Length: 323
Image (tube, rainbow, N blue to C red; front, side, top):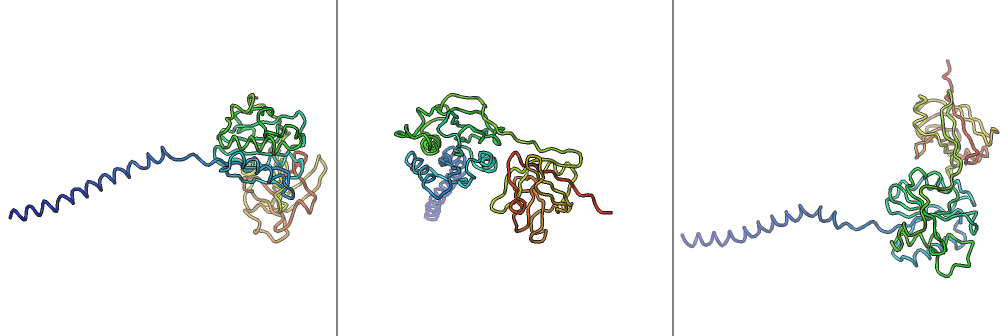
């Protein structure tokens, strides 16, 4: 009988120990999320580049080489390098299109710089979400200006690639990519870039989309390349407020500096391109939830010679229903 009790005690000890270990492990697992949250690593340093340089020569590779030399572990991405030469408006639009989708601490370098080497300023802008944009102050920040909380002028004498002092035509490499990489990798703070300008920056003129009687008026804000669709700045809220619904038929007039360039009198307002026959016009809300006009599997811009920017206006009406 005593032997039986001893055997039970012998068996009970490992069971108790195992239970204790299980409880301890359970407690450790319960506390793990809080610990892992506290010890979570910071997001990797990220640099996003855009320019009008194209990729036929070595300009983009030179910028990436400078950035990699500054911070070898830096993650470098391309927004685009196919902006039309000197087209500051397109640079502004591409930032507006892309910046909201990148996380805090991302550093953007945007170089469309017809005034390179002159007294135009270079700046770094900080957004409300903690992103930084390094760019010439020439209007490039126009369409993200509402999200900017502070702008600092770049002290070019201090914030440039060593040995580049006599180079005056490639600030994309010598100033902007170099400083962008240092900011992204934490080698220099935003506050040390140069003097604060508050939120002062150069802005391009932007026609405001509006309702005017039975018409919606706005601008052709961008050509959706390579397809040739016209993206306007007329938001979905204006379309909805006018009472237009999917299935309505619209009339579209496009003008440049007041001269009519295109008229389409029967444009179905639908959800996507395939709801009309190939080659037919279509109106829809684009990925930014703004009104757009296209040809299904064709280029509206090429057919009618349409461009984009503040000089290009659009007027849209709903066609009255036939009796």
